Length: 383
Image 1 (tube, rainbow, N blue to C red):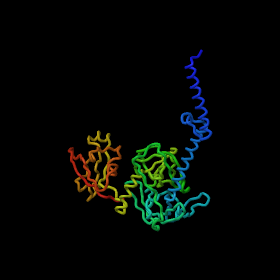
Image 2: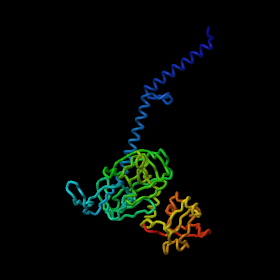
Image 3: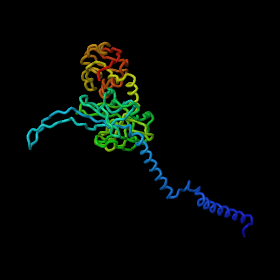
Image 4: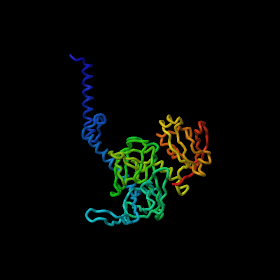
C-alpha cells in the first residue's frame, strides 16, 4: 500500500512530464520552438546546417569575385617580328615570321585609380617587347612605363586612364595570416583563360623558393613566401591572392614543379613597402652594391688551404664602396655584420641582397693571417 505522500509525489511528477511533453509539442507546432534540438539536433536540421554552410561559402566567393574582378587585369606581350629559318624534312629550309602578335602571358591588379598596376617582374622581363593590359570588360591599355623592383619579383606598370577610370583592389595585411585560412586566386590561367577563379586555403607560411627559369636568364631567391593549394597555373603570375574579405594578401608568383596544388605568393606587405618607395621616389631604388668579385671558400677548401671560410676577394671594382672601405684583392671576408659567411647561406651576394642602399655594414676581414675590421656603406648598383 502506497503512502499518500509518496502517491502525491508520483502524481505530481507525472503531471510535470505530461505538461512538459504537451507544452513542448504545442510550442513546436504553434511557434516552431524546439528547445531540445539545441542538444539533440534532428537529421533534417543537420542537413540544413550543412546546406547553409555551403551556400554561405558560395555566396562569399561570388561576392569577392564580383567586387575584385574589375581590379584584375591580363598582361599581354608583343615582341618585335622577325624572320627565322626552320628546316622541314618535307620542304627543306623555310622562312617563318616569329613574334609580332600579342600574347597573354600573365596577370596584374590595379593599385591606383591613376593607372598603377602591380604584377611580377618576370612577367615583364623582356625589355625589347611592348606590353598591354586588358581589363575584365576587354578594354585595352598600352603600358607606358615599367618599373622593376630589383630586390623582389615585383613590377609596377603605368597606363594612361581618365581620372577615376579604374577601381583599385584593397590591399590587406599579410603579417597575421594563419595556415588553414581561406584563399581565393584570380588570374589568366595558362595565358589563355582570363579571369579564372580558384579557391583553397593557405597551406604554409615562411617558405623559401626560387622563382623564374634559368634557361630564360632569370632566377631569383624569394623568402617568407605564402604557400597555397588554390590552383596557381602559368599565366596566374602577378595576380592577386585574396582573403575572404576580398583584400589582397599576396601576389601569385610560382608553382611547385611536379606537385599538385602547391602554389606560392609574395606577401602583400612586401608589395606595400615597395609601393611606398615607388610613390616617394617615382622609381624603385637599385640593388645594394659592394663592388667585389669573389669566390666562396667552402669548409673542405678551408681545411686543405688552412684559411678561414668566407668570401675570397678576386678583384675590387674601382671607386666602389669596397675600394673606399679599404678591401683588397686576396682578402677573405669572414663575417658580414657579425654573421659568419658560409657557402650554404647563398654566400656574400645573399647577405648583400637583404640590405638596402645606404646601409652601413661591418666586415671582418682575414688578411695575411691577421684580422682587420672595416666599415662599408652600400651604394646603389644597376638594376
